[in-house]
Image (tube, rainbow, N blue to C red; front, side, top):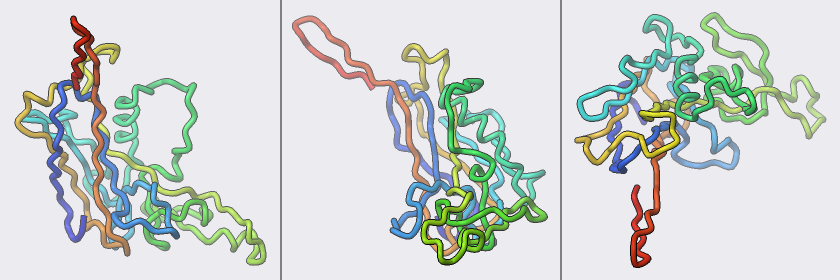
Amino acid sequence: MTNAQNFEFLIQERSRSVKSLFAVQQLSTKSLTHDNGATFFDTGAYGLSSAISYQYRIGGRYYPAAPVELSVSGQPQSNGGAEAYAELSKALNTVGDYRLSSPCNAKSWAMTTPNIGMQDQDFKTCLVALGLVNEPVVAPAATFEGVDNLGFCGGFPSANFCMAVNLETSAGNEVAGLNAEEQSDIALKCTYAYPQGTAGFATQMNIYSYFDGMIILRENNVIELVQ
């Protein structure tokens, strides 16, 4: 994902029942000094929250029916990614389920940090203020804890963001996902305001599919795997 704003990723998935798809932008080259598990909202050189929208195309149909909007009226200003978070909750089947706790919050979801580059410092910084376009202003945790305190820990976590879509056709208790065998192609289309992968590190889009797998025991002890 280098020096481009519009992407269309083809997804090689041909399972009979695809329940959901998840796409995350991550570091393509791992580093000991950065959080390798961070999933970025935006990696443009400008450091602004500039993702615009995303949508999955499966055959001749689009999922969701309208693009998931990630900006304010198409401008390079984040709307907080609430719509994308709702799509992720539907894909994980956790809508309205408050029994589960999550480290994902307003400090990490759909956020970038212009003054330190990509948000992959993993609690090494503290949140100071929010800028004019809702971008966070951070400072090293040592600024607050003291330079002699080697055990300092900030309150600003690494980035969290995922482009998810729910493809279930029922409550999820049976094999009722999207039949990818009958589809000509599956693709993810996403748009950014600025070229991606230019904030100091090369990034790549990793796409994961969640599908049903079932073992059928037939006569004469013959086992058939359906996936």
